[in-house]
Amino acid sequence: MFTGLVADVGSVVRISPRAGGARLVLRPAALPVDELAPGESVCCSGACLTVVERGDGLVAFDAVPETLARTTLGAWRPGTRVNLERALRLSDRLGGHLVAGHVDAVGEVLSRAAEGAGARLTLSLPAAIAPLVAEKGSIAVDGVSLTVAVAGRDRIELALIPETLARTTLGDARPGVRVNLEADLVARHLARLREWGPLDAGALAAWGYPAGEST
Image (cartoon, rainbow, N blue to C red; front, side, top):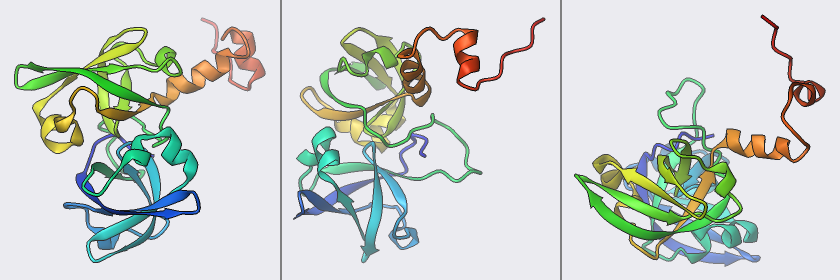
């Protein structure tokens, strides 16, 4: 699990095809590579990847065909900048929101406008996750925890503060750029529960949720 608070921005050094997937080698700017353990999870621009090798300032991850097809990772090239966040410790502060690193859809930056010292981005919102995104709710965009300013049926608006622009790849976001999107975990599970019918007390009890005491 992650918080969506980007700790570092790295860059892709090389990409090597491997059995339909790819090995991605990145150079973090500040993340202590020697502290990363093989098997550790790192959120890479919204996608949870597993460390397979590290050393000499570089860290490598393997991406399977499913990951390359359903995220922006398939379009990465040497020089691509990548948001990086290590997995949560149980003692860490949850400054953003709970992020799994499981990309739900890929959106596109439709427009960018200056807003004071920050910026307002408008992103396309794929139909697959549109019901899971609400105004003032949370969404992860390329692994960055953000609050939705405006939610439409096919697009959202995000108000970015100067800190976000300076410390993440969203500072470079321009119309046409594709971004990884992850909806809020709670919204995802509620939507799944609704597929089995209304979320009334009887249904919740049948699924093992305790009924609240009457007052």
